[in-house]
Amino acid sequence: MKFKMKKCALMVALATSAALPSMNSQAAGTITFGEDKSISIGFGMIGSFSSVEDGAGNGSSRSNDFDLNSARINISASLNKYIKGILTTEKDIAGEGFQVIDAAGIIQFTPNFSIWAGRFLSPSDRANMAGPYYSLGGNYWASIASRYGFNGGYIGRDDGVAVVGDLVEGRLSYSFGVFEGNTAFKISPVADQVASVRGSDGLMYAGRLQYNFWDLEPGYYGTGNYLGAKDILAIGIAGRTQNNGAVSATEQGKYSSYSIDFLLEKRGVGPGAISLEAAYYDYDTDDVFLSEQGKAYSAGAGYIFNEKVGWGQFQPFVRYQRFDADSNVDTKKYDLGVAYIIDGYNAQVSGFYSKQKTTGISDADSIVFALQLQF
Image 1 (cartoon, rainbow, N blue to C red):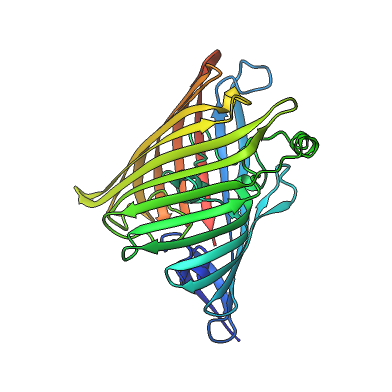
Image 2: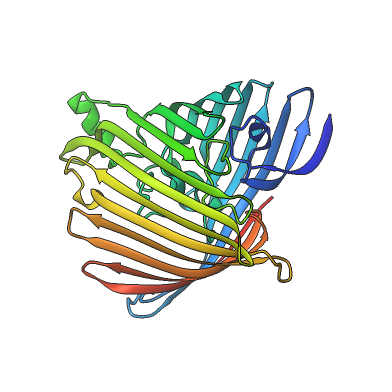
């Protein structure tokens, strides 16, 4: 048995088979015990301090809070060159324990085709696939525009099976799956009771297509920003639908959504690399939840300087999100900040100012400082 520490993909054993993106790097411990047999373990955390206007209990003073936003244990394993697996835990809502968010077996038939089965992120937009650990600026939950899974269990994950692969020499990537529908809009446990009484239990179908015009993006889970490591020009489309996927205490309807996302990153633009991103979303709950039905938009831009200052590089960024709900409530959020990239997504510090505007509610501004570490 041989133990070694090395730089690797987010889940080492899977990255070698292109199941996960090569940019999702972190320091991790890997134990190898034979040809194509290994197990890797790592963990990550995001902590923040936030000061929010009128966020205190009296409704008129600023709130000041330290939060552990995320704490994860990541385990990946390889039984042989064809059979892989992942297990990821995340702190529960109370912050006193952990829940399983990923537990999937992966059959890697070829380097360009695999089948995933278990619990994992179903195909969706880039922001959701990247998550808070691999997005521009760090500590970024795009929950205003990218609304997948924030109302369900397992932080956007779902139980099901999916085919994942790529064509055209890796330029056209695809993923299609069938899932339980834990991320659709339901009020639990009311949803299960209503579905049982009405005799309906539709599965959710989800898929994503992406074409890479410049550098390739191998893997299933996405990356929101490559921090100046690649030249990226990619367009992706995603969609999902589920009969009886929107369930309230009194109504039941079809849930469907689709999105289009775009990412451009270019190195050698002045003293660094520039990145531009945008996405459009359309959500439909069959009028069951008008507050979750409507159109959404997001956009962002960043610039990372090549030259290090001290330990790392500076990356100023701006972000914009909007969700125009059919309930006539319009929500907008603006972010302006800077990230200090010490070791890619393994170690970075960010600070940003946000302003959120919501119909019928006073504007709220906030200041957030976040620390992200992965080991």
